[in-house]
Image 1 (cartoon, rainbow, N blue to C red):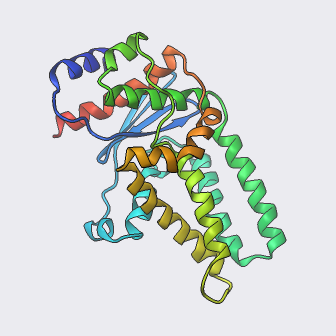
Image 2 (image 1 turned 135 degrees about the horizontal axis):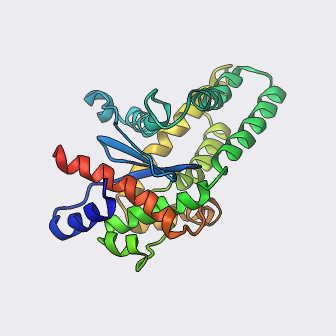
Length: 261
């Protein structure tokens, strides 16, 4: 698709509120997602598209459950068979997610050992290739959309911030104190499944807090300050070509949103 032409036409003709988009940087490209669609633009010029899963309406309305459903849905472009990850990569990521939950029933020394190994493996996966630069490009593209500066950003005349309030780094920084607090002050007698229950509840509670602060930008800048600081490490200043990769994925999602209403 002609991303530059589409973005120019979009800014000239669209006066409605823009859809809320999120994204995910990978070593070889950028994923952009809306509530209904996702698109992956690769640094090699490739473009893949798909639909986001739709959770049952009841689950989307239940506090705590709705956050877990939304979190699982955000990972759909990676874990679905027709998604952006290859088979071995999907297996690795599934194992990295499940391992800490299963190790809740293992001796502490084993849990700590595997936990550290899993953390370092995930960090290596997250930081490989051009991921940090494409992470910054992902944020820049979304900021360009929300600031109505898509054409200027495509040409390089504008460089919106690479720091985002909705970045997953902010969520991770928010999750850590919630998980630590929950484990330390768990009110019920400890059992073998307590670490598992605490972990799941921490994720659910953090998602509820995350959704709340996203609706209050001034509060978000205070509550998410640690994550905003960490983004200085988890993003790098992207080159124009990397920003265009993110804008191409963004344009593909916008096109489908407009085409299908």
